[in-house]
Length: 332
DNA sequence: TTGTGTTTTACGACCTCC
DNA sequence: GGAGGTCGTAAAACACAA
Image 1 (cartoon, chains in turn orange, yellow, red):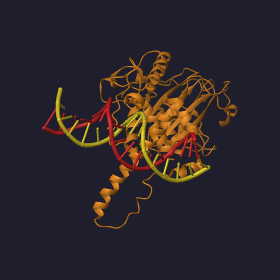
Image 2 (cartoon, protein in one colour; image 1 turned 135 degrees about the vertical axis):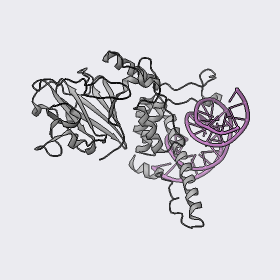
Image 3 (tube, protein in one colour; image 1 turned 90 degrees about the horizontal axis):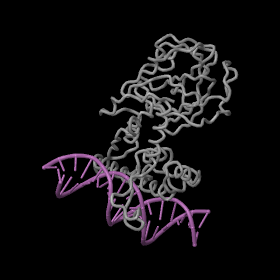
Image 4 (cartoon, protein in one colour; image 1 turned 90 degrees about the vertical axis):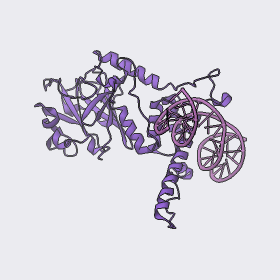
C-alpha cells in the first residue's frame, strides 16, 4: 500500500531509547545517532509502502552514515533472502521508512485505520541478539508506556513536543468545509510544526518529562471546552448550551468516520471510553457528521447538475456516499 | 470591534427495524 | 418498546469581511 499520509508510530518506551533529538521544524533523525555495536543492539525499519501487509522487520546489517540513504538491511519481507538498502525501500520523497534503535529484541505490531496508520513497536519480553528469537507477531508485548512519533515530509516529529515547554498544541485550523480530505490535511498538521514561534522551541532535555508532558497534553485533549457561561455545568439538555470538542476528540471521531460512516456498538463504547465522551454524544456526532456529508454531497451534486445543464442523469444521488443503516447493521 | 454567514453540538419529532 | 436512523432546528462557537 502506498500512502502519502504521514504515519504515527508508537514506540515502546521501556527501553527509554531515543534514536534522535529533534528540532521541531526540521528533524534529522540520525544526525546524533551513534550506531551501537552490532552484537548488542538491533535496528529495525518499517516499510510503509507495503502496509498493511506483513509488518516488515529488518536487521540493519551495515550502518554507514547517512542511514537515510545507504543503510544495508536484511529485508525479511517480502523476500527474506535478499538484502536491500533503505533507499531501495524508501525512495526519496516517500513517506515510508522509519528506523528505531532498540536495546533489546523488538518486533512490530500495527493497526491500520483507512488512510491513517498507527503503529506500535513493542519490545520483546527478553532481549536477544539472535534474530531467530524475535517474537512472532502474535506475541507482542504491550508496553506500559509508549511514545508517539510521526514521520512526515521526510522529517520526524516527536509528538511529545506538542507539550513543551507548556502544553500547547499547535493551533489546528479546521478548514471549512470539513471534507474528509481536508480533515486529513488538517490532521497532518497535528504532526507537523506550524509556522509560528512554537516551531522554534527546543525540546526538553528529559525523555521522561517529555513523556509525562505528552501524557498530560493528551489528557487535556480529552477534556472538552466547557460552555462559556455554564449554568451548573449543564449542557443543552437543560440549559441549551453545548460544549466544544477538543481537536483530538474531533480528529479521532473523524478518523473513525473515515473507517465507517456508521459506528458499531463496540466501537462506540471504545471511543466513548477513549475520548471521554458519552456514547450518546458519539452517536449524535455520527448522525450530525452523516448529515454534513449528505449536505456536502448535495451541494456538489447541485453544482455538477447546473454544469450539466438540463441533464437528466441523477445517478449519483442514491446514497450520498453514505452506506445505509441496513448495510451497517448487516456488518455490525 | 461588529455584523453576518457558517459550522458545530444537541435535541425533538417522527420513522423503521428487531 | 427500545434503539438508532433522518430531518429540521436552536444556539454557541467560529470565520471573516468591512
